[in-house]
Image (cartoon, rainbow, N blue to C red; front, side):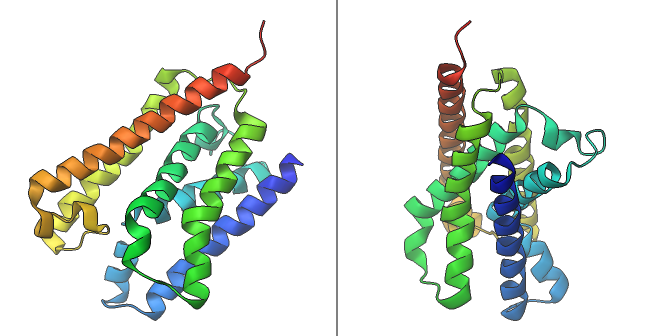
Length: 205
């Protein structure tokens, strides 16, 4: 059953990411290079790509030395935290700001609803009993921190911010940093909740 889950996760993940890339290039508002840079500026795309890579490594038994990151015990929990944050922020903040149709609607639901729910179920069924410490999981916070630095610095020079809630040009630094802080707080709360749930599910000695 676990392998079937991983194959399904691989297929959904790559389809969603590549279909979104196709749609963005089809409707590009800038040069191809700029469009590609903007594509990888979305936390949604980066996190769904990491999830797809994780399932790919699991399905094909990738070399544990070259792709050690995807074989660490904390990785499934960390990816679950980030992809759940992607889903929650979209449902609570971004869903009402546009109304996609056709293939874009399918891809949108995969990226923001189906894959986050799927990854959580996968973690709960197959990884929640792995012993993970706060020290191990907290190292993953470098990922969203590095992402934030990248988009803020690039946004300052290019004027492009991938999400409206930290668009410094329109909101100012104060409001943007407050919104970023709330997202980080949500991330920490979900991380703590999964750590707690994992401890509850671990067999008693």
